[in-house]
Image (cartoon, rainbow, N blue to C red; front, side):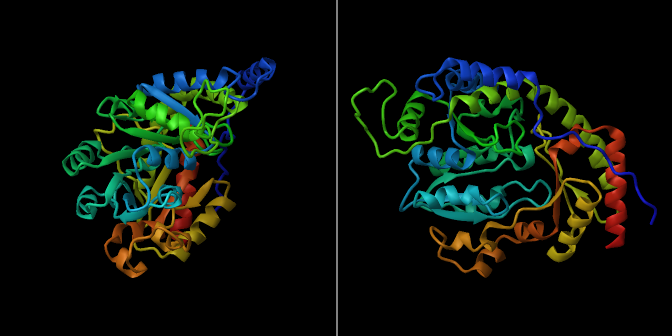
Length: 386
């Protein structure tokens, strides 16, 4: 096999003097927490406006964003939260951490998003929330899920950790009428190293969340009138300043990633045995947090060896998420009253995807077409090598 050229990808995170000026601006305030400064308040307004939401609340990280949103929606002991079986573990752990039972359901084998039929079958009188994850930025079928939730009298919480700037049939995440949670962890589409945010469609839920995220204390309180049993999830001023800068370049990055994914996915689809993640025409803006593809029929060990080879060739490749019920942590607290095998039996697609899926970090989609051509050629060589 001839030596392929190593593709060159942009660094991540991306930053320039915009972030430097933002950090200096936050520093010069002399107030570095949200209750005394203005950066968090400004970021919340800008992030809410960008996504078409009435309110945004910035928090410490994406996992806390999910926990806080679930609390606001009334999840907790005695309730169930339906989650896709193929997702990062925070989706289930957020429910489990507040005492709810996380109920995994299967996903679509082509989009990797939560399966609507499996979701409908999992609804019980104890179901409080359905949590679709917009996998890799591709929005789940919000039309069907909204109807399911409405008919069953339960709530939707969008796990939008991958979906900054995404749209469903022309509507932004914050315009869909449900609460949505985002992450700003270091690898995400916009980042301050860590951080999260929750979008709210109405003022009451926002105010309730503010209390919970700030030790149960009202915004203007000076006499320690803690009204609920909250915790401290407040974002600091420096993170918010960086995120304001990151938000400013998001549109251009999304436009480029959408173009590059069309190019790369066509190349990947031509490789025998490789099946790129499919799209949905109703999801008419996809920010592409990950470039994902499957190798149907491959074992986990064979897939992992391929990932190692791709990394050695200079490609930022990763194994797909492990199905949440295949982790030891899932069974420690708040798990359904089933065995691993029983859950796996009703989640065959999630089980298969977790074994044969590979994903590439979104910075690959900010590279040149030549770099993507080289990437696809390396993938083809390594797949052929087995």
